[in-house]
Image (cartoon, rainbow, N blue to C red):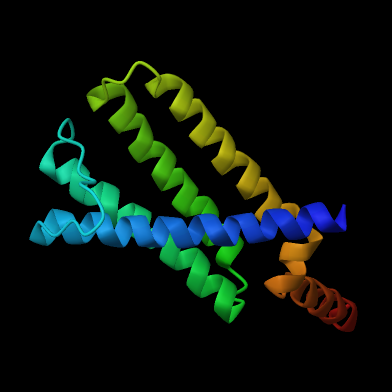
Length: 148
């Protein structure tokens, strides 16, 4: 089980790096028309929706990468918030603007990923240890005993 936990933690790190890069490239293209790899804009999305899309994706990748590197103890909770924002945005895009036939299946897979990663970030011993949440729990327990 330890190996699975390690693999999942690295997959989240990789996915966050991809989100950061994708969001940065999409935002650069949106703002300056610069598309170094390929066009990333969805012509079905209104300009405001497209801008929010890139900002939220870039923020999501940034929050996890910075939180992971600094071992910020609130990273798992911040990512649950980011996943909620991504799910909401994806719902608007899927149900209001997308036209691909597989859009509902893609939405279901994306939301499933967000739920599973949220559970992993909040419940995994590996993530607790990495983000120093197990130290905090122990400290709080000692403070409670001292106050009693």
